[in-house]
Image: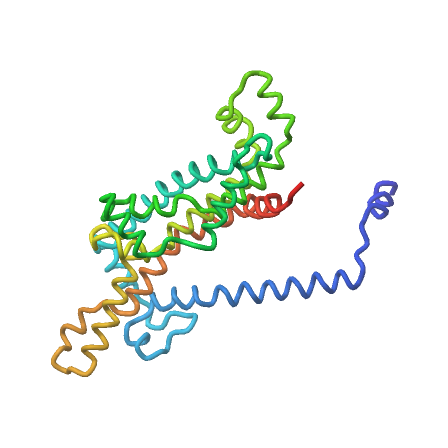
Length: 306
């Protein structure tokens, strides 16, 4: 009896207005999530439907004329899996290089002006890149002069430094207690040791957030792959974009020519395109549930200034 009375006293009473807000907010978020998921369900249904149903526009959220032919074709397409492998390589290598560059840039900028005299100049220099860039033509000329065309480094080096992600780490590093650094310096630790053994271990939420941003950026990138890479070395997104673009152009040019029916039949159908797009987005989706707690905490703590 005493325990039940104690539990009753310790219960927090929620005001009716607060309860109404929670209910309305929950309903709206669920509806928003459903609206965001509708295109994915339609894409999956299209990839599992027959070509006739897709061409007739009869596919909604449920497959019509269920078939796995599109996925059976993908299993035999060497070009698709080769492009998939290049995308995985780009994500791993690009994320590793970006994290090294961003971390080494954020650590000195997290110090005050007395500890790092050139801090204001370098901070302004990096922030300027958030609003202005050299442009496509100068960037292409530099990549060509360095002979990086058709190499993986043409995709990962130009985007290695992201000023936005660096600012996020700078704000997080500033919240690390200064006593920890001072104690390490008294013990004779240098800057690299302080960064690796003190700053980074306590900054896992921010690091997870930046890694997630960087990995998604590399996985979804397609434009640079179409410019710098040959067809046999294109990453997955560039490969899918090129395939769909070429198929659309061919369909438009052959639609009014009845003699080109055989060539039109060889163009990848909508179900195959949908299957490739759906497979392309699958690897990145499972990352969110595992990184969600770090993602939210990193955004909140990284935005607070002392």
